[in-house]
Structure formats: C-alpha cells, structure tokens
Image (tube, rainbow, N blue to C red):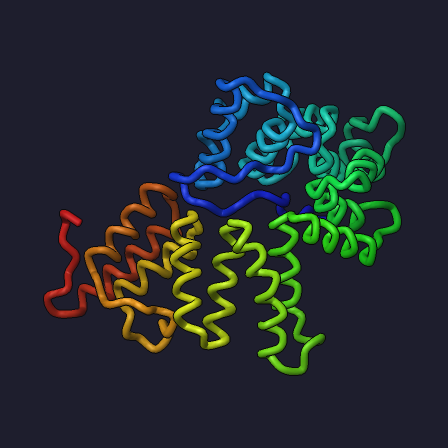
Length: 316
C-alpha cells in the first residue's frame, strides 16, 4: 500500500518557510536546532532534497522525530526504495512516536524482512493507531489527521472511520483536512448531477483552507472559482497563492502578465507586463530549480520570441 503525502507538507517556494508541520511527539528544540530544521525543510520543499540532510541531521540529533522522518524520506526517494539508511531513520522516528514513520516501516516490510518491529508486537499500523487515537480523542487536530491514513493501514481497513476522523480534523481547524475534503468534493462526480453543485461544494472547503493561510487551498480555490466563471475572485486568490509561495500560483501569475489575452487565461484580471512576467519566472528558477521552472522559461521564451518587439531583455 502506498502512503499518501504527510499532512502539513506544503508545495512552497524556497524563499518561504513552511507553516509548522505536525509534530505528534512534540520535542522542544533550541534556537539553533530549530533554525536548522526550518532550513532543511525549506530545501526539501524547494525540490533540493540532496542539500537538506546536513540541516535536518542537526534537528534529528536534538531528538526531533519529524526531522528523522524526512531524513528517511530523502534517502528513500534518492534510491527509489527502502534502504538501510532510510529504515534506520524511520525506525528512530518511530521510536520517538512518529506514526507516519511507522507506516513507512510497514510499507517497506521492515518487521517481516528486517526484524525491525514494534516493542510489543509485529504490527506497525496497530502501533501507530494505539499511539495516535488517544491524542485524537483528546482533541489534537494533527492526530485526527494522522488517523485518516492510519485507518487505511490497520489489519481491517475502515474507510468510514478514516473519513470520520478527516471530518473531525477539519472541524478542529486542520487546514490540510479542510483542503482534502475540498478535493474529495471536487473529484466526486458521482455524488453531484450538476458540475456547478460539485464545484460549489468544493469551494466551501477550499475557502476555509485558504482563509487558514494554506497555500494549496488558495490555489485550488482560485481554480474552482475560475471554473465557476468568477474571474475577479479567482485572480485575487491566485495572487494570494503566489504570494504564499505556491508554485502553480507563481506560474499563473507569470502567465497572466505574459499572455493575458489568450482564451485559456480568462482568470487574468491584469494588463500585459512582459518584464514582470519574466521576472517572476526567473525568480522561480532561482527559488525552485528544476524542470517546472525551466519548462516555463523555455515555453514562454519560444512563444514571445515569435512576437515582434517582445523578446525578453537580458537585464530583466
């Protein structure tokens, strides 16, 4: 079974720090370790994972379970599978109470293949459930969100219980859960006979996530509003998504400055500004190196080169 993305992990730009990620096993870090963790997570989320371990290791050595978990993620993703190094980091995180690390250990067959088992048994999902359920019942919204995954992993998966905890997490203020409910409504074409009703149902949850300053919520709210032909509201929220560090928001903002007149850009509520559009794309390449920013630069470079007197200047 594939583990879904951990709640709280945002797709943000390198210049922006994440909102605090869920730390179900809270561990106070000193200022130096906290700063190192934030820098490590900034690099991780800017698709510069190979540069993040030296910073995450400082936090991990100070006892931070989440840093341990992401060190395991870096190694697993680098080698496209569970390595001994990744297993060791996940196990350390699990021993510090991180339920997501426990589910990763289960995914990798750590107990069966490597004899890396919970202290009191051989069932990592059950261990995660027993750790997390009391916290959720005490009102911990991050623990409620974790239960959404855990109930898909236990010996007898319970989708109804998982969704119940997702609802409870959203009502308790967890922005990731609000956003997830918005996506479920948006994608559930069987439950709505009219697309407008489906999009309006999604809008409610995306709006709540956006108001909670969750950048993916801002982005998806803008997209839904665009589909509902509420262009001014859509543009406003896409700008907010961009300013909050969402990559798609940045790309849309640049696109609207570069090509506001094309049919696909009904959302664009701005005048053409080639210099500003290119400045955003060039900044994006600096902030998040990789194929997304490079492809955008290539596409718009070719498109604009075909227009008279609109070639971007090197000084932009």
